[in-house]
Amino acid sequence: MDDNQKLPADAKSAAPVTVPRFVAAKRQKRRLAVLTAYDYTWAGIVDAAGVDAILVGDTLGMVVQGHDTTLPVTLDEMIYHAEMVTRAVKRALVIVDMPFMTYQVSPETAIANAGRILKETRAACVKIEGGVNQAETIRAMTAADIPVMAHVGLKPQSVRMLGGMGKIQRDEQRLLDDARAAQDAGAFGIVLELIPRQLAAAITAELEIPTIGIGAGPDCDGQVLVLNDMLGLTDGFQPKFLKRYAELHGEAVQAATQYVTEVREGSFPDDAHSHD
Image (cartoon, rainbow, N blue to C red):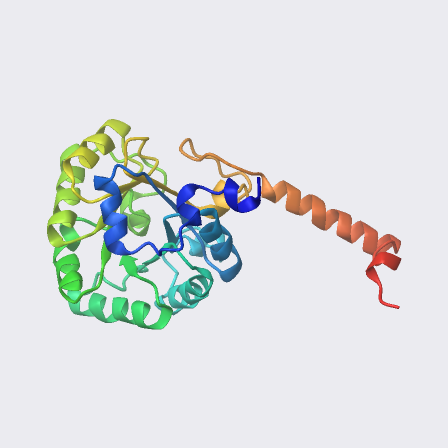
């Protein structure tokens, strides 16, 4: 069996995933697989693996830049990373996070900033955090033909209000209201983060748009993980919802350590790695 045959069936299709195709997956009862990516190399890898969508997340502030929250990330930085990602992607839907204070000021500001993202990166759509409180903005953006994904439950950009990350969100009525408001305002999908699985299941059953869970149980229409976490590149980070599919941090340290040793002892480069 060759490598192409080992890929998921959808990965072998040349047809790109568009917003309508992404939405239609819910009606087709086809679960959606989403991963983050922040540069050309990793975007090409996860696209080749057959993901339905790549989220250029403002989580890059933490896993790429080394901040303790997503708040410092700028619009220019998101555009810079998203442009690298779209250059590599042949099939997956590319969704770009709008960073803190690029959409909260006013719907007009949100439209202008989202427009920059779409124009300068060739991404298909943007994601913003919020439901009821961002319904007017979602409605204005979609009226301007900007596809918007919403994000409710734990909202990382609200870390100062929440008092920290990683807290399960259990306000059932508020979460239901946020999800309904986002859909009614025109969002084409919604991320549900760190909410009880029963509530995520109820929201998923009620909504007509796809729900993408992270720490929200198995009943969502799809799942998203941060690529660096899933690959075990973020050493020591192990929340309950995270499954590590590899342990690349340890392997990378081991490989780099071997390189350092071989250079210092003079065994690299050897004859096989030298030109005559």
